[in-house]
Image 1 (cartoon, helix red, strand yellow):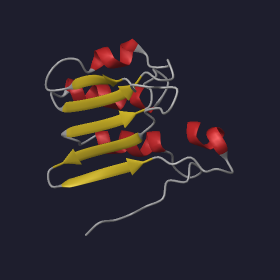
Image 2: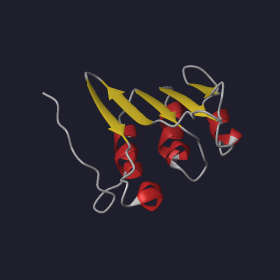
Image 3: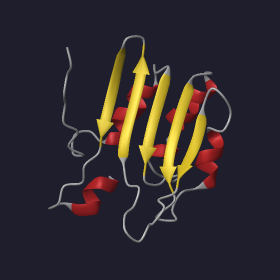
Image 4: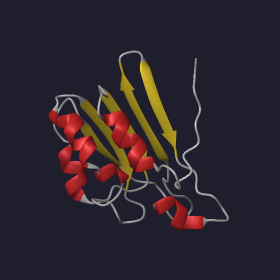
Length: 126
């Protein structure tokens, strides 16, 4: 049975939830608009997943010119991998997902980040 929970950024945030999921994950997949050292894609917990010989797959964009090469380099060795997505016409659209999937023996945690229109970027960045 699926369980759905709301991460409200008050009691708990995306980084904490993903960090807990990484503790036992066999595979983590991430698709984000940009990967920054101080952001969720740069979490030390993700590096620990790779160091345990498990897979971290990172797909990130460069449309906003904010992706840190150092984050990509952490996941360049198998079984992990890092890929960059370039939007063909970034003046018309941008690659801007916020998706996280942590899997372990028969279960998964999926996190989909959505910015609240009335709280804007400040709520998203916490």
